[in-house]
Image (tube, rainbow, N blue to C red; front, side):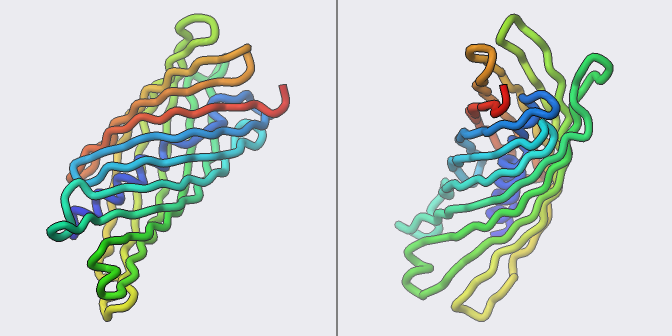
Length: 224
């Protein structure tokens, strides 16, 4: 179970550090972001849908919902799946500009995960996961040509959390913490010099797992 829990940590950290719509907006600019993505590691495969709002181009708030499934059966003929919902915030302390070579952001998130399987239903067991994450990300933008740029980034994050079993006597038996490093390469495509499409493949490395994924995000500035 410990390895499975670590896989969930990687899922959370991987998802959390792909956020930050302020990165694609100017200072004092407001805007919305919507998108989604797919991710996979040795233990789980899943997808997420995300939405966020940028305030002044430096502060982000947002939500994510998603689903993942364990690649191996929990018990014979019984798959373990989960849905999740998360809240995140991020703050850009630095934004790349004429005199600033990089962008630097700090972020935090909370995620709640609800697990399901035939075995849990049979024994009337409710399994809930709660996870908290904090981290930092560094970004560097390179202009390829008009309306097209490449934006590599590096993130480091720390997560702690656990799983509660309701309906049995075991409570908070599985608690763990994890540090994860993520490398991402975002391709930013501007449309009509206003709205943007961002395609981001990522690789995240933890103690026991490597998570791969790809995200697509649409950015809609509010005050252009």
